[in-house]
Picture 1 (cartoon, rainbow, N blue to C red):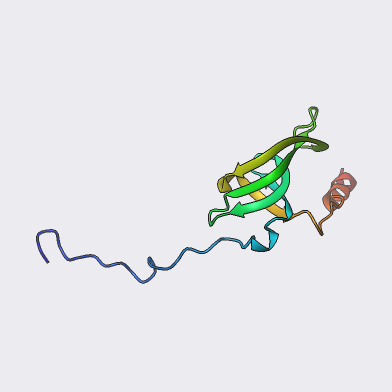
Picture 2: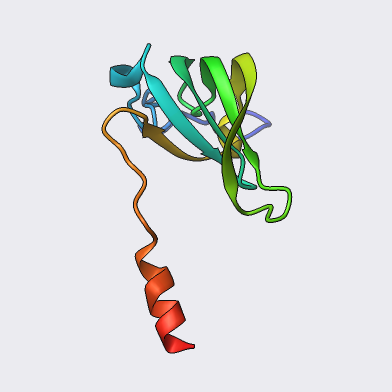
Length: 114
């Protein structure tokens, strides 16, 4: 008791260790592609990350946008070197090895409707 009321105890849930949202350990020292909220994209070698998906990339290159269409990414790149990426800005993370770009299957349907 006491003047301040009963002593509060921690619940069994507040003691649990925070785990990572995703496990990127198998991609350490391998190239990954990161897409950001807002449309920017980079490729680099994953050097580290934390439970909030803050990411450290080395040999980072940013894909530049088309000046005529800001939603389109070009093949032109800008070298950025070692970068630290804040997890709240990350939209998509994908390995470079084993992925390939495919045509958008929805574009054909949209053109057919018009």
